[in-house]
Length: 530
Image (tube, rainbow, N blue to C red; front, top):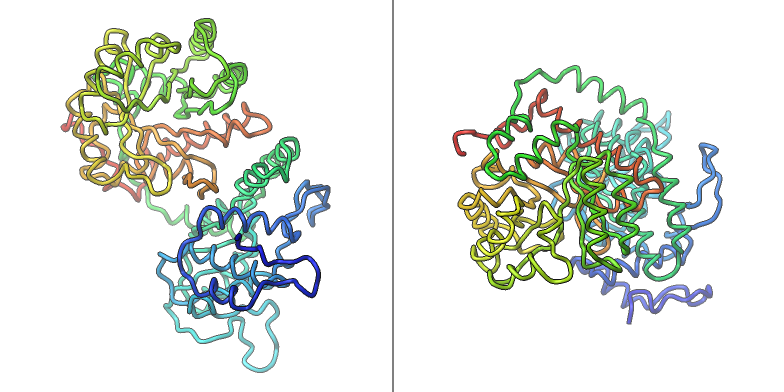
């Protein structure tokens, strides 16, 4: 039986039994994937997320409209919304919550009742009599406050709530929202020192609704195009705050070696080639060609080729493959100056991977500059792949970390991968990693490249557990070198324009390392470790 199996359309049977609601309201267990998808479907069913033609306050016509005021009429939906939002912030440290008036107030109240979290209220209109307070409730200066919001587009309403809270000397660093429309709000809030925690990204909701045939591909593409083409401007308050922060930031010395400097430290020929290409082409973007057909893949290579350093494939998902397709891809790579990376994720014993890499119908070693492997079978897998790839001038990335939620590629496993790479730098060119700055000893040898998947312009996750980080976070705080972008480019209305945008964001993050501080301790690379 599903979460909402008791929910009826007719007024008299609008809600399930009180006992079933109470049972779910008291649980603090994370929602399952099935429950998350059911909530997404139910929000669509009750009209909280609508599709059509809607005139927005700005005057723009939008193919999607989010109206979360309706959820107050559906207690079970409201309870599940509060449960999902709580799960996004349950590991944060805060003393009180404050809902943004008006739609987020019942959500904050439900979170307060369901999880024992104290809350305060912000008055939208301050009275000129009585206490004349802007913030109502019990609180003390110096306490930390979590802002609760229903929907973020530009972030302006959150910033309107931030100001009175700060005037009461409350510390605010985090915001939880039910739906992020992905139109620039997260970046605007970040510039004001606020981290956004979204229960749903609008694009992830589209994925779920498409999966259940409630939104067709044409409509989903129209919505994604609208989001991409209508990014909001920085609100005036955020712009002023960002300018003040920038003016107050002291200048610091460079902390990372340049790509061209690291090329001279690379022991693998493909790593050297990649560093030189990145510096020459001024890009650290890799595009993941997660498409269904070979024709789509080749078209994507043509579209994004001018903006990328690496083009990543999954050859076994294409509808067909032969030597002519491989030759065409190689020709495009040469013409647009990028490297080909077949994301094969080898994970078998040495003798088997020799055959998988060199032969079969794909003959990966013949056309792919880069491949990758798990170290689960032990270092023998490197020896097997090296036997085939090294004579051909190829390079191998070891999977040290993965971007999926609950991955086992972490901790001691990551340390073992780093140690194995150090023993095989002639063939191992680097890592697939998520947060190399946090590794014991940092990212390691400057001659090794770190490539990080799961990158979008806004942080978050999808309905299947993929966790996303921004280019600034990946290249900056996390200490990686190459951002790998899939859906952010291939699902865009204009993949070439999207690739150009990610290229600009990735390169800006790299250049900022030469001028900005704040992560020196974990980002500095020691050339003496080579």
